[in-house]
Picture 1 (cartoon, rainbow, N blue to C red):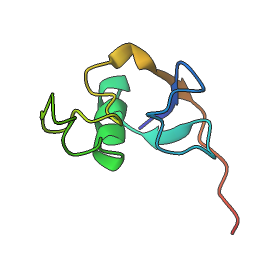
Picture 2: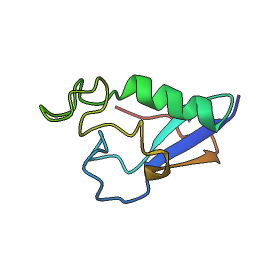
Picture 3: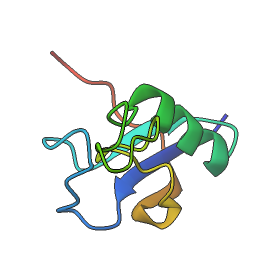
Picture 4: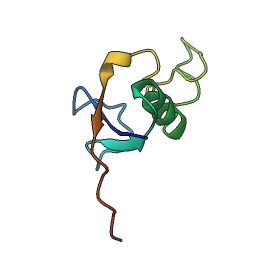
Length: 82
């Protein structure tokens, strides 16, 4: 199974859940599965705003903005040392 790198198209996007990490590497069958795994691991704020109380569409949501995430196949990331 290949590895995919996900990063925000705009590095200053406030929805990015990991401010100290410019990208996330996930193992997935394809780019669509990588996006789905990202959405599951880093869900949005549960409910938007009082004006738009839609589940899973809060300020942290990339769900309805697929162009905001850049997904590309990448090599296996190096193991992290603690």
